[in-house]
Amino acid sequence: MTVTRSTSDLAARFQAAFGDAPDGVWQAPGRVNLIGEHTDYNEGFVLPFAIDRTARVAIRVRADSTLRLLSTYGDQGMTSADTSSLTTSTAKGWTKYPLGVIWALQQRGVAVPGLDLLLDSDVPLGAGLSSSHAIECAVIYALNELTGAQLEAEEMVLVTQQAENDFVGAPTGIMDQSASLRGATGHAVFLDCRDQSARLVPFETASAGLVLLVIDTKVSHSHADGGYASRRASCELGAEVLGVRALRDVEVADLEEASGLLDDLTFRRVRHVVTENERVLETVDLLGTSGPAAIGPLLDASHRSMRDDFEISCPELDLAVEVSRANGAIGARMTGGGFGGAAIALTPVGAEQQVRIAVEQAFSEAGFRKPDIFTVTPAAGAMRLS
Ligand code: GLA
Image (cartoon, rainbow, N blue to C red; front, side, top):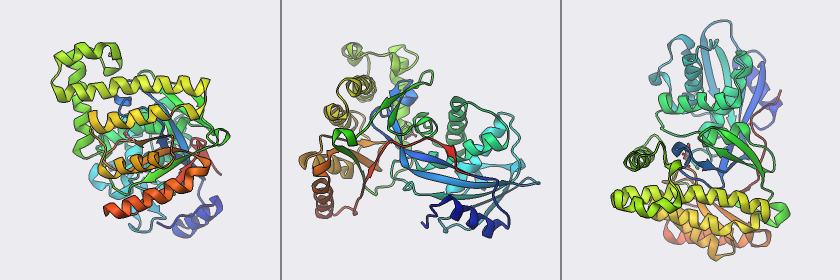
């Protein structure tokens, strides 16, 4: 992927491709979820943050209903469509994300004009850092201005969720887009997914002498595949049998009784969600009282729960977590939807290189692909750049 990083480069490239200057350039970040996995669609709690890797879109409104979409990825060429006849079958590759957002806006009665759009992104694709939501959030943020729709962040979150669920075909929740739209530098977003109430929680690794390493296993995954949907179905079944609106309404103290009412598999799925909600609350408390250095054991417990109860990890993620911990990380877990993607390792500044080398070596010995290992910091949410 050729990434065009400066705003003026992107505008110049737009001009060369479409023959005119863009009306503006907007950006939205990917995200790392610190803790709270598969809790969002159970109306529970999550604690993600926006990262310093973003998708950017340069857009110009056209006088007709034609859509022309191009990316700096260079592998797909120009895609053309018409705003009056959008269907999932017109959408190929990355274009399903902007087209899905336009379609979802139309479902809400927002008239979307024809557009020329150039996308640039340095959020790695398929790495579990929400590259797709970064694109969707950059587009909704831009179109919210360009169409005069004047949606609040909470509504933009729901538009992008509808794009994902009904256009892209991935039955995902609201965590990723909430982080991308509502994130802030130096903070994680503590979100209650039942009513979208959110609080920014300071998460400064540097002042605690830590870095947050992302280990992209290069195992690609898709939430439109069956694994994500089947976990969601198990959660819905669990809630129905237990007679609650959502698993958010089940407490850790209820688990013993629940074990007698649910089959073993459904019980383990439920136990993950219920204990994970509790871990999010504990993490938020600990960050407030003791700072990032105190949350390692909760990250570890979250990973075990996803590996053993929710069964969404994979050998590469488990190895990344295990080797990071054995080489100085104070806590590690897979992040995102699972079945591949990335792990995070909260690591003391001095141990960063050792973790990096040890994980690369362990992957090589296991015959796995070389992982991509980099640090992230909590960064700003979606914004207009020019
Ligand atoms: C994906 C989805 C989110 C969330 C996570 C798991 O990232 O897009 O809505 O469900 O998986 O926590």
